[in-house]
Length: 125
Image (cartoon, rainbow, N blue to C red; front, side):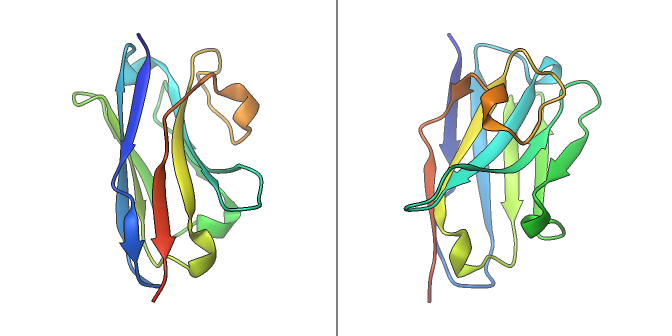
């Protein structure tokens, strides 16, 4: 049974950092892409970053490049999103997602068939 469980969200001041975790089960990270997405109140879900299956290559939304880092630990079946220099406008629910049919991943959410329940990130002083 495929399952994705996010953790690590919380309240952080502007400029602060958080590390989100996505623990997966029911499949092996080595062979599938994982994406991170966010949805802020009143906005559509947006792609933040993804890591592809074969070579672990990564991509980021332009707005987070240089501040966010995605990484995976295959042995732990966990994907991480390190978020530094957070901005108030980045407050949102963050989701990880699994793309069983798109090993190269992508920033479009239509590529992903399984989603976690999300973890809330609040950026406020």
